[in-house]
Length: 123
Figure (cartoon, rainbow, N blue to C red):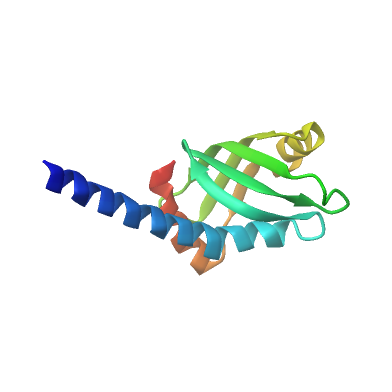
């Protein structure tokens, strides 16, 4: 039984590494490009089927912003990403995200599509 548990731990660790690479090499740059001029995301992770991000906003560099997206859906082919239900430690950002960023996104980048397909099972 210990061997099976060890194998599961190794598999889960490898899976988490692949997901982390997908998030940080494809998804985070996509999001940072989308918010260019407003701020920057420096930490992005999946936790409890939510996307969690930490970053800074232009003009508020001394205050860290945290954002959680509670409703994430990725199409099977990675061509569509739906983001809804934003929460933040900054009420104005939460309201702005829910008013302007909560929607379906058509994904045209092949690299991002492949990364999203890998991430899909996390949601």
